[in-house]
Image: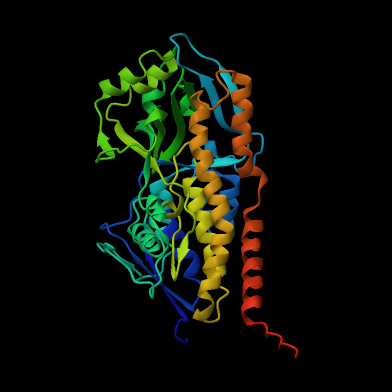
Length: 424
């Protein structure tokens, strides 16, 4: 076997980094190494929603069978267009609420750590370096991804600011969205007999409990052999958008603080909250939409490029799409001289889609908290939820991949076609 034509350093072992490494590892001409700051792979958060668009990519990457093994089969609706994705209720009231909208379509939920495990299981031996923290890079290297607090992004936009002006500095760091969230996993067995001998609806249905400036997402997942309900209870003050939020962004929270935040909400919500005995409190940050993902031989993917609020459940899916498109572009290379065009083609296609999802993720928080310009007209709110989510089921990720390949072909044609001589 000959020497690889391209050496790639992936900085960060999250979902985007491992997906990229797995996808590239099947190409002998590409050598990949992963540098992870922690002593092992780990993921922030618990649950992970997989839209049909993302599920198709997972299958195209050859991971479909392994993926199916970690899904709670009672929640597996990836082939059932009429199945429930989320049920929406108006819940900021003492009395029991009722559903005002039901979002249907193919989808699946998995535990993030389990998904990371199946990715790690597909890596070739000897390519991972733990306890390796990136401090800086040079443009002669090839680096890829390292999360929403990305050191690579910080240096990239500091460098761009020196070249082109200080307006690039606003992209260096993530900004607070004005939202905080309480998170916890509740064992299903604790919710099996909450009212007249019946189990809580969150054990079987994916729920969004909506109220003014607050909402709660729940969905069942499996954590190994344990059936759990993932709960994320969000509180927003969007007048504080982009205000400074001091570290730590994640802390343990007393249960009393959580209960006080939702004290006037419906009984079904209270049954959940009293079982969140040890919630964690998160300050939700996102990135301002970046003007570019690449500079020189350095490219950003995943949260480093488009870290978003969680309200669409699409962050992991976008990271997987990044890895899929970029790996297919890199696989076309016959020599390193075309790397610039490869990264330009990746940016040309993925920038538009990923920034669209980043913006709509923030907007969905407004909508489910009756702060999206639609007031509290439930029928209108439901219609807007449907519109926001339509993109995931009515767009084709493989078509996007083909557009990237076609754009790369056009760039290479321009680069290498003979220049016509001037007539005299």
